[in-house]
Length: 115
Length: 111
Image 1 (cartoon, chains in turn purple, brown):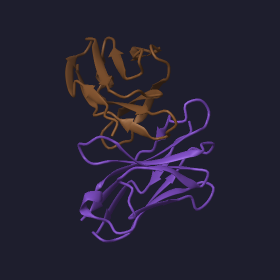
Image 2 (cartoon, rainbow over the protein chains, first blue to last red; image 1 turned 45 degrees about the horizontal axis):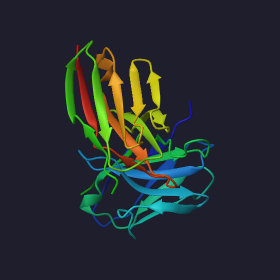
Image 3 (tube, one colour; image 1 turned 30 degrees about the horizontal axis):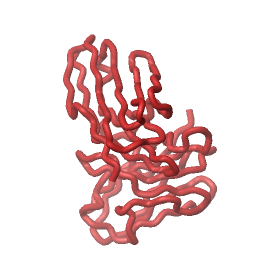
Image 4 (cartoon, each protein chain N blue to C red; image 1 turned 90 degrees about the vertical axis):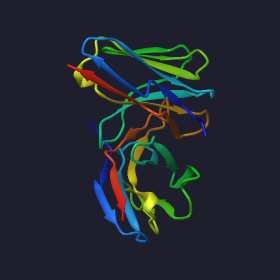
């Protein structure tokens, strides 16, 4: 069964460092998303990406964040200068454009710890 | 912020009992998804409902979308320990791709 895969599963970084989280969405999907979940809190939308550009973003997705689809398979989230409060689980998701576009399938997540 | 409130927040029941989890909002959603999340893992999609009043069944799980598309419920019949987990509802607004997630219901089924 097709699935969204994320790497790494766990990333520890020092405050101020740049991190890149990687995702391989489901191959025939066209919409890609990043969500995050701070420990004990609800899942929050960060950004959606379609046709090689950002289609929507939340207030959380400020200038420190960027997304890219460098090739036909990978979808990345970059945090330029990490802060302690960026520590969270980051989930990549994808969906297709048939029927309900928002029927998103999530990866296993990357646990980012900023120290 | 489109707030989706889930109740109860925590639920602990004996194996074999029935339960209902609620997802409520003052906003109208074009679709609503239910996910289940295990600790340290991503949400796993259970069902999507799109039509007001729609009822979908997935084995012992019954999902209903409110007539006004502002609320939803998940009913589990004869709960089993394998049903233990965090249940999340997530709504999508018309014309938007992103999901607004609910606050979650953590279910524990005791053998």
